[in-house]
Length: 255
Image 1 (tube, rainbow, N blue to C red):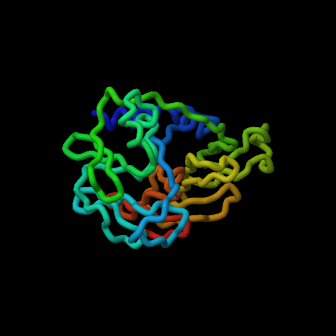
Image 2 (cartoon, rainbow, N blue to C red; image 1 turned 135 degrees about the vertical axis):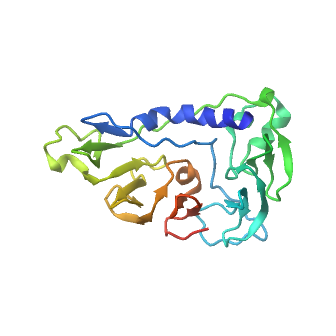
């Protein structure tokens, strides 16, 4: 399916990032997430779309009764939930680099990728299907990778954070950016490599901390997905019951 090919192209980009997340004294495995194509939080003023938080998208994916659509920042459906899968409105580099000149315009931030009945489309902000994906239209993506400054580090079964350029000796507690004291840590992909958001587990609950070990999202969730939502939506994909996932912003406000 075309959507899986789009997801694979972005997964290949982030393989090095994912596998470098944990520098340990013993081998460890990390929860890997499906990551979609390049997105953007760049917004144009859109009539009828209220702004609660100017740092997050105006249209937010949301699922209802097993189907997905888009709500505005006040939680009202703007594009009804009729799709099997939706992505944030944002760029698709496969289309921006398409050999088909007519398809390129559908790769911009004005459109979102959705799937229904095994068919993948781009829709506009009114919910209209404006383009159906074709394998022949998919171009090659190019990326400017930013090398992460920090990595998760496991010591005695606990997770901490180290800064690669400064870390030399695990027996020196002062060399740790965050000393290993968590059940789990995962540095989220983001634009600011010097101040990443970190998914953490403490007392069997998930939350988010920053590189200074300050709590950003309290430890009250049963899971927080390690996916693309922070990098390009400035949101976290969370659940309290392991079934119903929804988005929250960095103020822990839900949508």
